[in-house]
Length: 172
Image (cartoon, rainbow, N blue to C red):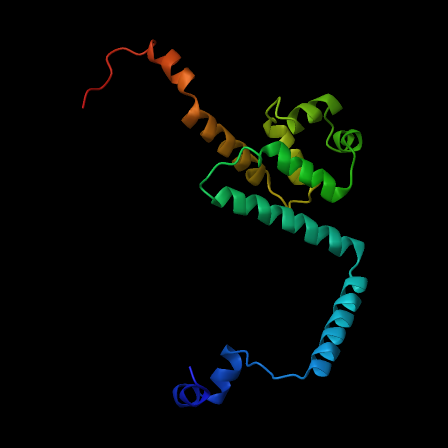
C-alpha cells in the first residue's frame, strides 16, 4: 500500500504503532547502526546473571517440550529420555550427580535415559521439585503418555495376540 493511501486509512498514531517504516540508510550509516546494535547485545549478554541464564535455558526446554506435545505427530527421537538428557545438559550435571540429587540409582537413571525403562511417578514428581516447578510433573507425564499412545496405535502384533482373547465382539 502506498504511503498516501495509508495516511488516508489510518491516523499517524495507528501507523506508528502498527508499522515499521524502512529507513534509507547509507552504507556508512548501516555499518554504524550494526555496530551499535552489536554493542548493545554484547552489553545485555554480559549483564545476564548465571541464575537468569539458567532460568532462560530451563524455560526454553519447557517450551520445547510443550511445543512437541502440542504437535500431533509422534517423533521417536523426542522421547522422555531425550528431554531428560536435555535437562541434564541444561544443568550441566553428570548422570551420577543428578541421580544423587533426585535419590535414584544411577543405573535406573541410565535405563530411563536410554529408553530401557519407563520412569515412575515418583521420578516425575522429583523432576518437578528439582526444577523448582519450572517443568511440572504433568509435563513429564504427558511426554510419557505420548510415547504410550504411539505404542498402542502402532503395535499390531499385540492386537493380533489379544484378539484371540475376545469373544462376542460387537457387530455394527
